[in-house]
Length: 561
Ligand code: ARG
Image 1 (cartoon, protein in one colour):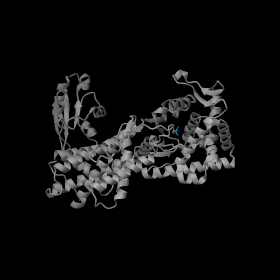
Image 2 (tube, helix red, strand yellow):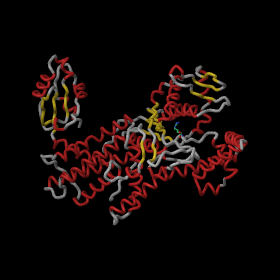
Image 3 (spheres, helix red, strand yellow):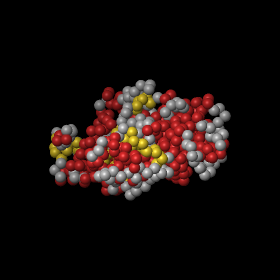
Image 4 (cartoon, protein in one colour):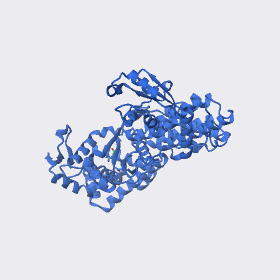
């Protein structure tokens, strides 16, 4: 039930529609003042009266009932109070009926949203810098699905470029299949680093590498086989991480997928008179938009990262007819996407407005920043493993007799990594701290998971809530929980609109805090029967909602902790 609509429908104010009134209703910062407030200042003009007077008249005329139990005029505001028992009853029965669907909706029905995220580079380390795109993208994927959209998860693999020529060259000089099978991605990366070191002494290696790259392009059997080997090795390793993080993709069409799809786009650019020569290269001049030119073809005729993205956008529109196409990519690529989107707009693609760069900030480790060039790589797998290990030692210390510790530590450790990356507004740079993300009393996933375990244990001891009758007197601690619970669908909608999964993460912490306050202030199991069953029901609603919230972020909830 939408209380704003309900309230607005019962107000008559001359010259103002019900819809306008509904939009004017606000939530006061302090519950003491009321649950909703109508500021009357904007009505003064059309009603030709002082706001204070308008508020008084509207309050006097308002028909209170079982839903709205109190109305008061204060300094030009009309404050409305919703009946606590009614609100609680509505909320609890809705959640208990909808359960794992609570918060979901069908508002996105019929709309396909492409989400380009994680987009790893073949043969390059999967490091902490990839954490945000992976977990943000995955959360947006789950959120879109929950709200009825049809998301298409795309891993736009970095599987094209001269570096693969270098790798083949390095592999043939110093590598072997055994080396790679044992050392995986790290061994591959070492080969790459070695190539650069050796090429400094021996210029001929660069020539050799170029020749190998050409061979891949020409479809030479050996070169292609080696490239495929590097690719499968990379995908095998990142696949394990995706599995841990519960991350999925519908498409793995990477940069090389567009090899044969760029020419038509280049032809179209040419036909539309958008390509100009610049030092031998072909570029789209963007000076009118205060941007450097977008290079489409290098002077040697090779395509670029941007060329592939332009072709990819066209392909995605043709294939999925997307409503929106999101690119979850670090803010360092701001200019790249601005250029690509502008070029598409200049090509006359009216859907260019539906392309969204969902930019996010950097993640660094407390221990010091990472530098790929200096070989200081922080592998994501190491960060996850360390979190799981730490979780295990904390759990073992807190609850030595707990069964299934390893499994629980995995859920807690992985959750800590994800939550750590999602708790802040995405554009902020963050410093990842193991102690912070695994602080059971902090604003963390383990705090939320622990709260779930607490609610579950209450439910186990108390038996099923059964049908919960709401007592006439709802305690303030209970009511705060109810109100928060009722907000969940709205929070999800806002998170999707702003592409901010952190809204969900923060919501979970807030709800958990309120539940814990209620838990410590109000006795649940020893309360008189009607109150007891309501409190049990409330506990169940909290558990359901927290599980739904964490689930959208890709975080599981252990049964016990
Ligand atoms: N592989 C790229 C990188 O690591 C990210 C690709 C993002 N997606 C895209 N369509 N450009 O920087």
